[in-house]
Image (tube, rainbow, N blue to C red):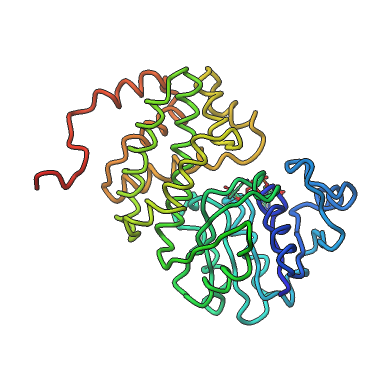
Length: 333
Ligand SMILES: NC(=O)c1ccc[n+]([C@@H]2O[C@H](COP(=O)([O-])OP(=O)(O)OC[C@H]3O[C@@H](n4cnc5c(N)ncnc54)[C@H](O)[C@@H]3O)[C@@H](O)[C@H]2O)c1
């Protein structure tokens, strides 16, 4: 199939290589001509060092490349998803499937990214979210990875499963789009917090507690928004949480480490240099939690550190001394 991947960051590039390996006719589109020219010249993406870009991979910054494609993969940072989808609107072939692989929630609307894309391209085009524990650096070097393709349109989810699936990339399907997308977006907050704990010199106990309680509150918000509880125990929930909270590939975790070591949040985000989705997701989670009346103490604490200059140690002390609770809300009811 003719496929364009929109966004030539680490993730777009790793997925373009995977699709090429699966025998598709693949174009990798860059936001800026200079970025595309650099890829054409070096045949390597600077964020995926040592991974060559074969000659068969087409590289361009001309959006006309999406004409005639059966599938489009949107792999820009979350803030650029709406603008990118709007640009392709008049160029799509009838029935072309859109695949969202970005992780986030739209800042002003709190919409999931598949909803943002659907708003821009219209209902004639199925939209699928692809997510799970998948660092670009590792997919780029071909290590076994498993993800989930989520769509209300079963045929579209199964098409995406077929396009991406290979001996090294296993794809499951689900219809719980909200669950998958919220798991993907919100775990970045917890990864940032895990980094803060590492930067403060706290240990494995602290991180395990943070991950477990973090997942509980992600699932609580997810369920309030229509997601299914079991999705948060799956690849896009627990799976992605484990990978981002424990790996140095995670820029959210690396950003948190800098904050834990004393950097101001905005300075830490700048130093990472690439998009730190957890920074924006913390503001979105706070808005959503307030709007829906959902208790999300860790996301609230992250918001205070990131946007209100509160000291991480003080915020963690407050989390530890909240009023006593049962572990499960269903206990003894
Ligand atoms: N890197 C990973 O391992 C990974 C894995 C899964 C999902 N994701 C998600 O994929 C998305 C992209 O991540 P990445 O790691 O490839 O990012 P990146 O920081 O490596 O690259 C971002 C790309 O987006 C482009 N861009 C910047 N501003 C733009 C705009 N206004 N319009 C269109 N394009 C623009 C940049 O030119 C760059 O090529 C993020 O939402 C991320 O959470 C990343």
